[in-house]
Length: 468
Image (cartoon, rainbow, N blue to C red; front, side, top):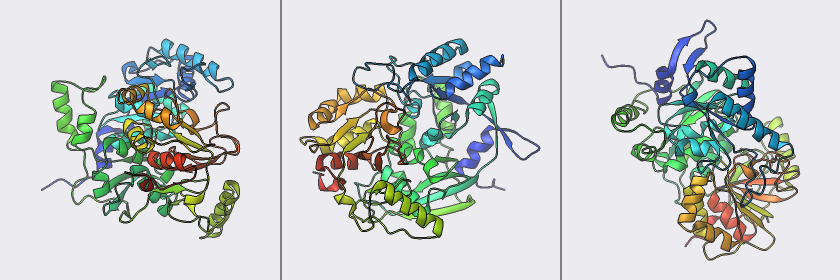
């Protein structure tokens, strides 16, 4: 008799479930823990204060990314008021704990969710946690990864386990083949717009379908990065041969006989035919235009060729839409591709990998940013920055009028330093809340290609209009 078909999520969960507690939770083994200077330091300090040690120091890592100065040449440690104290404390805590720190001057430094796959710390089939909500990014490799709080991080460091309530299993199936200009960022914005920012609440979401199969490895990570914006506990995509190749020969990836063993296990990381999900959703990709947000939530998104919508739905939703329109200084019926911008940003753990920079540079080559537009590109890691410079992409960005920065989270969020205060910005980031990129900043989320096209035009623009 054949075994019961299982989902990818069920396989990952079962492989790491150590025990079930009396209250119905599961004790899950944690393979990797990644910290950063904004939140991870507190966990390390609490651990030391309690007189506890890290159970597996070789599986714990820390990076400087959230508040580091990304200005060219890094003239300062940080532009965040009081931020230098975080950085100093992180250095001391990581040294005392004996864990690997990717400091500001480390060639492997970068945004945590960019460097964990780059270095082979995140791998298919592993569990990875980090006190950061976008840890789900590495689900794009077929990992089981989720964001945790500081107290949970302390517990995971000390015990190598976490108590977790098992989420439901959801599959979002993308049907049809999208236009070549439609990227992973557009797909996830469309899902959130259709099914809301709570559509995946309480679920581990597997993204599947022909459109997902066709995505490159970095596109899969973009998709999973915004699973949290869908309300999901985590997101994941079944890994394929491209993923296996991507994670090979990385600093921390298995080699030799261990790699052969890993490959055999990785190839089983897929949902079995006939496996059942608790919930299933579908999105038709045929005819989809590149997406852009109009409001103050990722669910406030629409096609670049559409108009600002009228508030609709139940009373609470209508009121939220009205508030968003007021903050964004928009009115129903305005055409999205006629909205003038004052800033353009390419960066973040969502869209600052090499493929993202290549897509933007392709549209910027031989063109100039519109007068009055402040344009900035912040590579997701120093390795991405070096690879882009080896291809000459930095010259394309700089010739077009973009600032070319060092790596870090930068203007994904405002921490009292750099920002787009009072400006309308188009951004490749993942959140567009009020004041997210500075006091009074109005953020429109989009793909790197749409950001580049909009920077050149001086208004939100369909990248297909600039494609050659």
